[in-house]
Amino acid sequence: MAAPASCPLCATEGGVPIWRGPRLRVIRAQEEGFPAFYRVVWNAHAAEFSDLDAADRQHCMDAVVVVERVLRERLAPAKINLAALGNMVPHLHWHVIARFDWDSHFPGAVWAPAQRPRNGEREAEVAARLPAIDTALVQALDAWQQHPATE
Amino acid sequence: MAAPASCPLCATEGGVPIWRGPRLRVIRAQEEGFPAFYRVVWNAHAAEFSDLDAADRQHCMDAVVVVERVLRERLAPAKINLAALGNMVPHLHWHVIARFDWDSHFPGAVWAPAQRPRNGEREAEVAARLPAIDTALVQALDAWQQHPATE
Image (cartoon, rainbow over all chains, first blue to last red; front, side, top):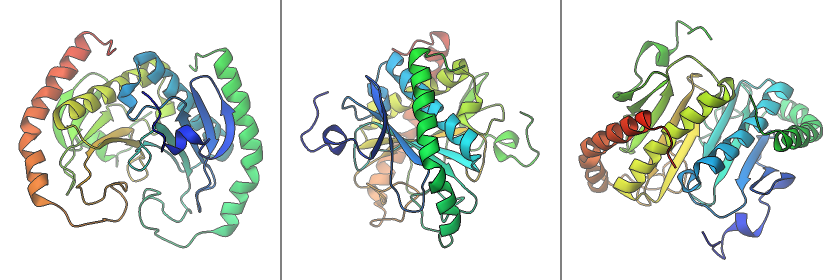
């Protein structure tokens, strides 16, 4: 599918670039209140997950799982949230979000109204670990790219 | 993983049962304002997508894609939303939601605050098509189960 001139995920990385492969990239989002929020962005313009063929879908979800596993190992979050919405930016991107029982929206979705004030101290603890997590993501994604079987 | 006694997706179908396979089931959710809202529920208790092995993950996402394609073909929605959150019920289930530019929350997430009043007439038009969609889902899921390649 041709890239619409107005698509921000065709025109820009969409966040802090962490890793780039031929078919997809991983960026770190910068969403207030949710420091451990990454996105797996399909490089080519595609609106829906089912626009990808079977091999590409598997490749995409394998990358999502690599990111999910690093977040679980490094942060032991209460839950991982995965979502491909694309209502605002219909260019396939998977949100991979580490959620904590102390975060402002838990157990609601990050898109729902806040349930409590933000915990700056806890957020800072997570943020302090992001450089090491970014490094771990690069290592895990490189290893996966070289040996794609993830199980 | 053993089923916690309190898990509602271990104890109940979780919605209107549409289709059941050995590893997963498809139910229709009954969420106010979003008539074309289905869920792919993993039958065994698993909290995170990455708790599944590679074959099970592929099986799960293939089912999600079968549902997504039927919704696209039957309803031509503005967007399909996919999400595995599980903050409230940490038993793996994928939301597969047909979104419309007239729905009360678009382009926000269904978990976000409403952006406009509900459109009862349009909702009823979608609801009237659900029996045919349910039938199409059963046919598509049966066909997939017999010939799992979806591409």
